[in-house]
Length: 79
Image (cartoon, rainbow, N blue to C red; front, side, top):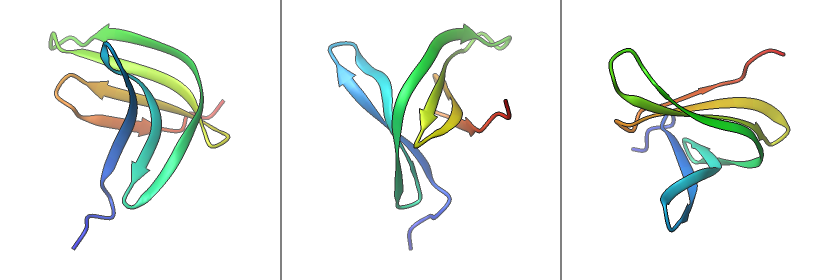
């Protein structure tokens, strides 16, 4: 049985490895990343780094946070 709540990111992978998100996959549905507004790398108080992407996900503004452990957080901020 598949996990319908699984969240994955499909990346463009260039010479630097996972460079930028191209799609978000939730369960079995894939959502295309239309545009990346900005990206930044930050260091959490724990010392671990995170990559943050603010992007357009099929017309909706989304924020994707990727931890160096591979954890993914997806939010849709109200603006």
